[in-house]
Image 1 (cartoon, rainbow, N blue to C red):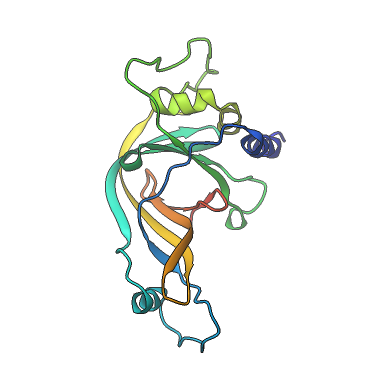
Image 2: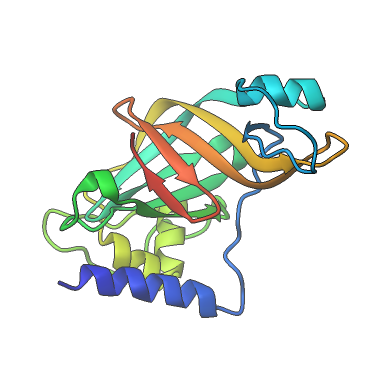
Length: 208
């Protein structure tokens, strides 16, 4: 099968590219993983939120309801997240491995499409039953060959839908109780209302 090769090609191309992929900075969020440091006595069992509140002040969890846009592809899907003007790319995991033990590839791109730009490329002709993505999705798809190879053609048109997005910080507290974020976990509901987990550190996504 060519699918594992496409994922390898996508990963290698992103690593070797001199111009980094425009990542989308998450908003200020709350930690869900707490790792106290120092040689003091162990803390009694309690929830991460309780520990964090006792050692540092930080903002409440960031969660928002918005109208996202979803488009399915042959081997994955895209979601437009309007509050951060981002196109999130979800490549399906390898289907030959049980889904409970796999995660798909996730990438985030800034939506740089502007009104007046070409919405599609007439030189790219989709196979019968498939379509070329347009506008913001299409620009990401056309300008990133490995993304196009991994996702394939669009399987249907774009669909706006009500979504909920939440962001969580992964990090640790220092000896003074100051929290230092090291990475982020995002969740977003898909077009069917199912929750998607996104791990920024590993660039992977999964469904619980």
